[in-house]
Image 1 (cartoon, rainbow, N blue to C red):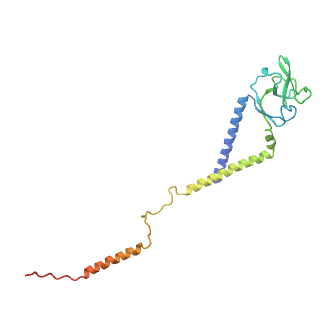
Image 2 (image 1 turned 45 degrees about the vertical axis):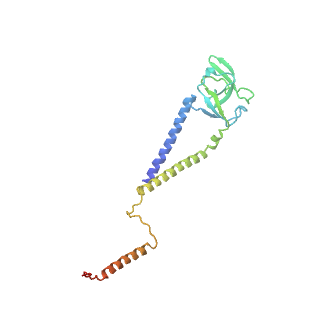
Image 3 (image 1 turned 135 degrees about the vertical axis):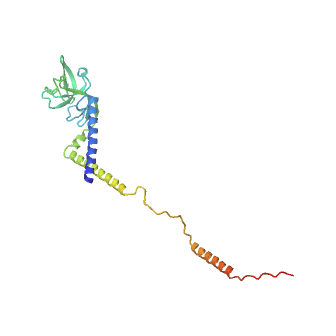
Length: 224
C-alpha cells in the first residue's frame, strides 16, 4: 500500500514537471514563431561573431521580405534540407521570388548548395539574441550523462515521497491532543512540612487530653 502511494506521488511529480516543460516550450514557440527557438553553433564558420557552443535565440516572426544584407539568419541547407545553417546575408540575388546568398564570416567565399539560393522555403528566422557558450550544457547532457541525471532526479522524487509518507504516518500515530494525564491538584513538597503537621496534630491531641483530664472545680459556697 505504501509502495503504491509512493509510486503515485512520484508519477504526479513527474507529470507536473513534464507539463510545466511542455507549457514553457509551447509558450516560447509562440513568442518566437519557430518550432525550435534555440540553436547551438556547431562550427567555426562565423568566428569571431559567433563561437562554437554559443546559443542562438531565433526570431521567426521577422518576415523574410524584411531581411537585409548584413543580417545573420538561420535556414535549412537548400541542397537537401537535412542541416541547419547560420550565416550572414551577403547579397540579394533576386527579388521575384526573393532569393538570398549568405556566407560564413570565417569562410573565404559562399558555398553553392549551402549558402545559396536561400528562398522563403529555407528561411527559419533571424538571430535575435546570442547567449555565449551555454551550448556546453548540451555536450554535458549527452548520453549517458543525461540518463544519470534523470535517474538522480527520479530518485530524489522517490525519497521525497518516502519521507513525506513517513512523517504523515508518525503524525497519525501520535495523539493530536497530547498525552493524557490524571487531573491532580498542584502541590509543592516542602521539606519538614510533614513533620510540622504531625507535631501540630500531637499538640492538638495533647491539649484535648489535658482538657479532659482536668478535675471539675467545686462550686464556691455562697458567703453568708
